[in-house]
Image 1: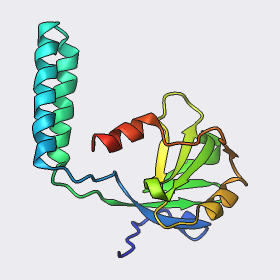
Image 2 (image 1 turned 60 degrees about the vertical axis):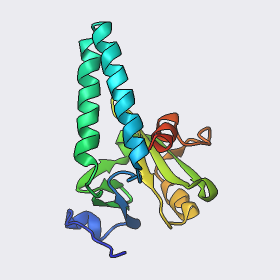
Image 3 (image 1 turned 90 degrees about the vertical axis):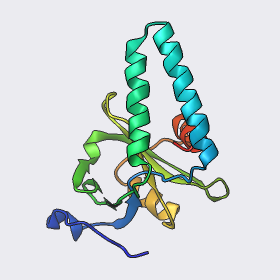
Length: 169
């Protein structure tokens, strides 16, 4: 695989303690049966939503279906990720360590789980999940411990990611 790094702020590029590219999102192979089941589930949910007159749920189902259809044939982009002594870079965005609460590393190669999770200070920002690929998790941990607390209570990937993997979303 060819490493493609987008142009970023040059002052941060040279100070990277470690960097690599990640995929924009997990791209799952889906069979025709998956699509048939998804259509049946979506239509059933739409019928129920109309029956109980929950029109917000109708809009959510339609938008979710459209997102899946639009992204179906698209390959995920490569995104540059780097760890610096002042924060992390994700694509072209710099995130200062003061914005982050903690990190955790879940590394279970047999289950195909190799990720770093960053929790933000604010409750309204979602958890940041970064795929490790072939990067040594101990090296990442040693670097991050200098700047952030480690969440040792997290031992498994979040339920939302497990369900997304199970349902190939």
